[in-house]
Amino acid sequence: LVSESDCVDPSGPDEVTSRVRTALSLINATPETAIEKIRELLVSLHLSPTLAGVGVPKSDLHELASAVDPVRMSNNPRQLDHAGLVDILERSWDE
Image (cartoon, rainbow, N blue to C red; front, side, top):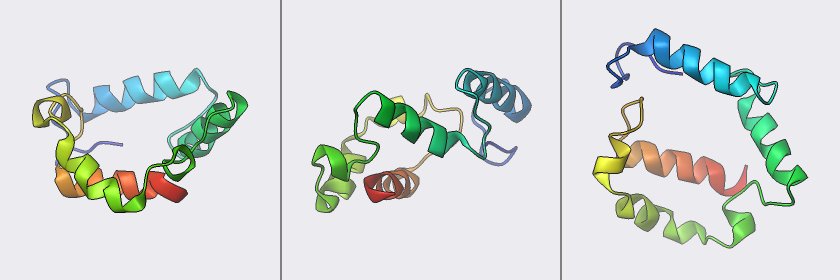
């Protein structure tokens, strides 16, 4: 989740964590089980849980990260830069 050092939401990390836990509770998930629960949900909806599964070439991940509007990234409660976004995309590609 977020910490004092990476939280950009003015409500602070405790409030962000509380909101994330509330949202995850809707799918019976915790921060520890969230990725697996979301993948299960996608599969149950007959959707691919990976970027590779929807045809995104791994070679396009850096370009995709560069195409993200920095203003939109600032809307994320956790500080996120280009390298962090690439990391998320790489982990989402084939896990």
